[in-house]
Image 1 (spheres, rainbow, N blue to C red):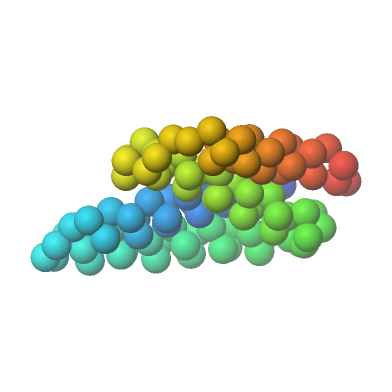
Image 2 (image 1 turned 60 degrees about the horizontal axis):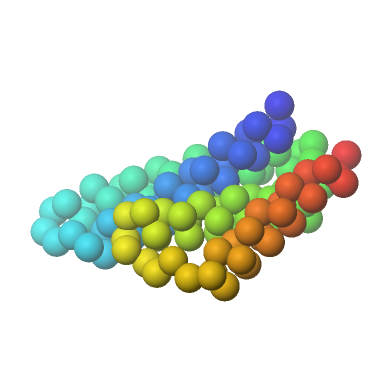
Length: 108
């Protein structure tokens, strides 16, 4: 169950990065809605991470959480913010994902 919560926490990390990107693109009062989404996503992500670290090792939990956030944010950037798709960028993203999966398998 903790691994599922950690995955959800990582997805909320991706969400708060997405909200930051959208806030950067918008103007007027809409910016505040994106910042509200950022703070809500950030809070949920952090609370879930705190819950998970009570049972899973902090080093593994934090590495997996940031790995999900980093990989997910790169995908969001490519899909929604027209960031470039380059071989080396995808290569290192792939190695990051493999590292996160590896940490899951070697952790208790």
